[in-house]
Image 1 (cartoon, rainbow, N blue to C red):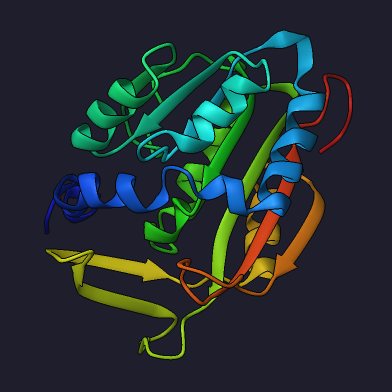
Image 2: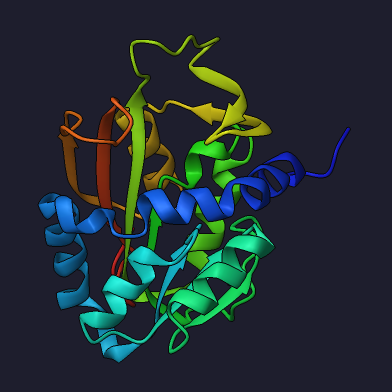
Length: 226
């Protein structure tokens, strides 16, 4: 058995430059994404830092920084982290896994994870969500984005699409298409009740033609029941 996440790390190291070129400015054309990020930004407790987990080249991290938040980016791919540091040097970026976050308990006021849990297996999701709960401060928010259904030209097996090529590079990547009801149940089991569930169809342009979901969950404040 290979090291968990090794294929994902290697794949994104290979495509990092092409990925940054294609997606670094994508938020300009995604008003819903910007609105949801703004919603999170308004509610971060006690001016605590917000972590962008699975940050890639750091475009979401940068946007949060521009909203006035203390931000940091975390990604499994060392090359993605290098690019993120070059593109937004005023923000801290570090290599890390959402399965074992390098943060103290209750250290973060918010977490964003845009299209990063799609590379986790069903068995790994509870571990990641438990980590999110651990590092969030009471009242802290989590904003997840993930794909629900695949593009018409992509075949799946049990809701998983395996790609051997991405952005012109050889990879071995599994993309999991997720059921919002299942993710909501898993989050709530981890002690992160969901407050909002938004779904949308793909927009025109270059983005993958998938149906997408956004979930906002909150770690209950101290003294309240989850």
